[in-house]
Image (cartoon, rainbow, N blue to C red):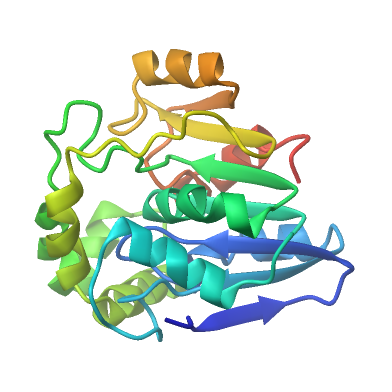
Length: 231
């Protein structure tokens, strides 16, 4: 499936951004100007079942195949969050970015022990605006509106389908390109044991204490600091 994309900037460097479950390209609204200001042309996708992209069957390998159908090869930088980091890792051998950043990767969709069921997130599909404002009291109206719009545009069947993969471990054996794993502290997806194992496999791992799962969205300054040397 060829995905809907948004593009910003006209620099000679290329960065590609892949969002997580329940989101779309709008989740990167703070990162985009930070990248275009560094001379990047930025391309962000809407994964299948999200935003303005098509609907269909849902499985990790299909999300990855869509990236390869849509994105140009050999970008200088590729950033994936959560489900987007899973899709990116499965596509990275053929996509061949110069550097890859995996932020809170959902390589074990059910968490380190397989106990987190992606199907449970389908309940957020119809979360009312007042609930989102209550959960994110520091957000302005623009961010709340973008979150509501992304949820309304999301096909919750993607979460239901991913439930079948919650015990599958998609952790890469080794990084195929220079790769950073960014983890919240605490994290429901990247445990301390997993971080140690990732370092052994050759990944650089950085933690962001006190961050939520969506580090780039809820703690942008700390997110950007954690990317020092990778942008």
